[in-house]
Image 1 (cartoon, each protein chain N blue to C red):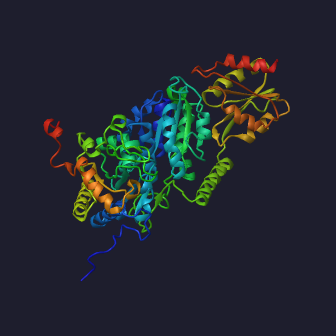
Image 2: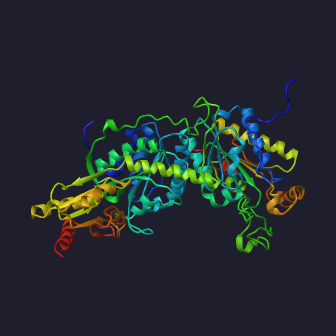
Image 3: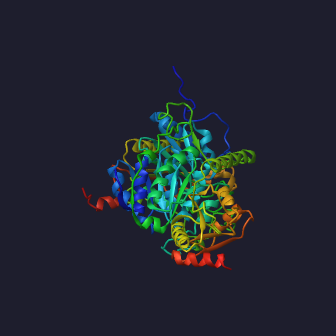
Length: 357
Length: 258
């Protein structure tokens, strides 16, 4: 199949089906309701399960129940909805079940707005729900990348028995771009009999399986959490993904930006290059695990005088950028947090301020 | 002659953590007997609630999931939608089901999800130490209603069976109790009927069991039974509120569309 023109939200839904996931539970919320609308038609046709739950809270536990009995399952939502799902996400992580959550971010806090935002960085990367846990978080910068991340998310969730989150801003969900669905990214069947509560008869076993999150014995809880921690350490070893842009030049400034915002930065970098100014960029594709080493190394380049983190929120990823840069260079922040995407000109102006203080 | 009475295969051989006089053990045993009799142990998935029964999976020998407080019906929905061939039940207390999980139980019932709910109503939060539940009776003393439940402040106790029976979709709703052997036999029949409806893919099935909590009621097991009979049964009347064969009053007045 060649390229087709699709809206991001619909492409994300289709990508899940193409990857081999036919179970979807969701609750409508702007700006991602098109996923549910699309799948309410598409999934029955593909022989899958579509159910609109009564709330995001309930949906997160429908996901838990389905995932715990070993079936591939996913949901999509937007910021306030993800807050409600965060309770379930904490349990799913503790119960070690694979599942995929998509957050098409809108502005916050509270109802915030319905325009694009990147204000759920902390919620996605640092927790969101209670307890010691992490999600593997991938952030697409185009509809094609959203498709590819979505398709690869199921295998990753199954590899780690941990939820994976696709973190897109509202623009990724709303814009139309040409996409293709690479067959190579179809998830392989995975054997879940060792842990899934899929009924003893399903796995020809006399041993029952149990999916639980309660560990009353402190030593048991400690080792359970250390085991989770080891999985997150393995993700940091094996799953870091980023794109480096214009880093072969002797750039005076390094930008760190992700998602839609990074595309604007890219245009700004190209325009500045025409003016004889070289700017490098690291674009994290995984937000957890975070490309710490890549940013450390790129910031440490001799020509680089400062680092600028550009995000559509009031400065969240900038904390991880500071940690990554580790004091080698000053780290600055620029962004907007009302739903407007900064223009290339605004980014260029910010860069020029830093370049010519 | 073979054995006439034995431990159900679905029940594990272990020591109970429930208090003396608590009816959870009886309810567990009835569920296990029914699962044995229906021969569905190897395709059953139970869902443990939050509350005293959070560790109930220790007492059964089939697959179990452990829910968050009140969310068991959503988890059961997730399982049944993706694996309709599995036999799924939730087992929930009154704090879990009638308070924090009210939304989940009402919507699962209204969608007619094909799983079974065992609802333990003992008019109090057990695990957390005897706080007031939505089912606590007027003037009943609890650790958060030390002077008795004041209905002017907190309303009247919620009758879950009657409330769910007011919905048009859910089709098998009954309230039974475990206070004496006669009641226990009837309760078992109801539980078996509920699982049978599920296995036949007939309807959502809900069995409320009026139960005792001697520890949090501050009573001996015998006094607790007496109190439940005198105070709870008049308010929480026993009976079958709806069956798929009879339908409900509301169904009778609305002509089916097909």
